[in-house]
Image (cartoon, rainbow, N blue to C red; front, side, top):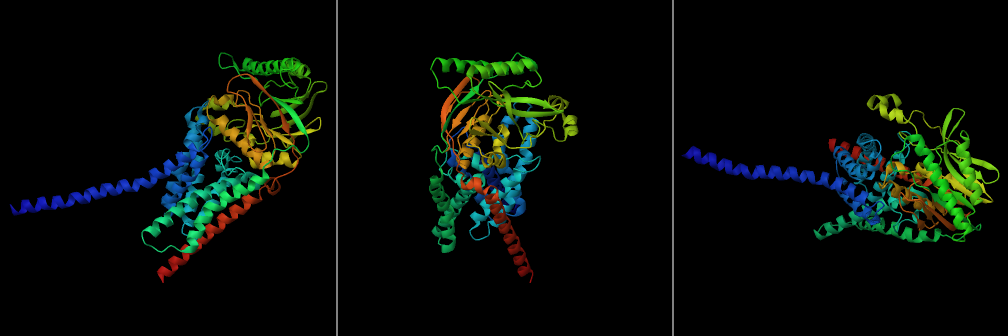
Length: 535
């Protein structure tokens, strides 16, 4: 009896320990779940939703899960944040080619955010750590915008802020400063909340720490308010009446070559409709017309029938048309914008410089072919890169060109302005991605670029959403998706440059150096602490 009773007593004593162990394992999952959910929260802050402010609690939560963590834990937590953010954000990349490329892209891009997590955890022990941590995030975005395959800056925090109060900061220092301010404010909110909680527990909070936390929130907001003085839509070199034509695309039932001809015909047809409405005084006569990327995938220099369709449209409207075409020249395949004059024919061209990996060219072609031969058959010949910035001089108005994917890259938009562009056009073809969020994400980029360089930005798209954006980031006209339409509007032409345009890459370099200094300080402090402990 005694032995039995003892066995029961010991068994009863073990139950709480087992429960405690299970509870402990569940508690250890909380930071992982929170990190992934914070990534999802950041995604929800992006267009087409106007919930830009959700980026702040997203980074506040990210700061909570990372502060004081070991590098191994931070690596995993950062990767989970990246997956939560990028998996839904980039799902549009799977529309045509299936889930494998989408998952591979996300898996690679999330590595950058995982490394950022390690950096944030390292600097989280430093004084005024939100500043260092926000700079580390900016450094991660800078790396992601450059490697691999010349980078993929999609998903920069700045591109989710087109509707937000921080947007004017784009004019001050471009996307790096805008993104840095948002992330700093998020980390600062967490730090302020943490210090308040510490004080309520009766612990001593240093005044310097409290001041740093307060400034981490207040400075970005105050800076955004002050930067509004840099935002203006006043015409400085007169105005231009511009027309955007969205011809739409066939949805189904046509083989490839027939569809290419149909897309050209659709854009010509909508231009003829515009011309008829001008003659009927239903709409003002434009000074020039902008067609989207791939509006004529039939090379008008090689196929006289395609050239005839474009020429007839130009003669009917009576003004130059910027046509997006695929051109083969000297054995090279080029994504080209052609300025087609109604009298002189083609007069100026711009070749896309930042071409899309796995879309317009195939890196690692042999490896990709081994995985799926159909992917290499879809892209039998790689596009070549252009070498010069695109600025069309159209009867005295200078129109900068950043074709589709190029709008995501700081340099590709900025150098149109430094080469004299008075407005910017972003001709695009989003038809491949159906009704996904891709077109709205790209439209938000163009809104940020408008404020960054204080220029009107037009976005003519084959299937929508086409839009006219004022220099203050406001969309004044837009089309629906998969409908033929045209937009006509008088827009301001501007010549002044913002600090962001003048400074170029310098703010980003400065923030990367801040990040490097913070990480160096954190590593040095850790080594000194270990030596002291060993002694």
